[in-house]
Length: 191
Image (cartoon, rainbow, N blue to C red; front, side):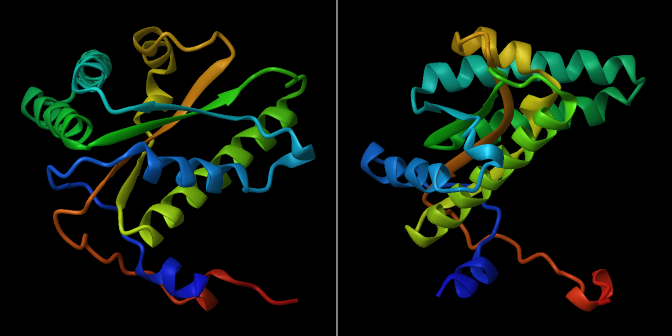
């Protein structure tokens, strides 16, 4: 039952060393393609990374950008280094990383861009649910939003692909931490 899957899903940040075959990744991407999209534009694009070298290059370059951005914010160097190291570790130790992008082709108005972003987010949720159902763990990271140019350059993505998120995927090393949610009635108005 889908509701059971939704309630059981967790953001998994640590994985076992067990490799994940592309035969398990392809159904996740197929699930992503089933997400609703405004005007059926299907603006999502995916780059799947399993090469340790490619993951390390991406993690290092994203880490460099994170550090330089945070230094301009005058954050404490210890906090910056800890965050950079944590991000690198999460990317490098995940067996598979999926970069979720949005194609900017045919996006004329600001509202079309916003609709495309919402459509891409829906595809990400489908990936997370499909991963959980397949016995895999996954975690949605928004880090590429801060450096889409770096992601495009490192992965040699097409010019119209704008990185929106990064999803780490693998066999969970633990069950993840359940996040408390407030009762939906606290966030709902009935008219």
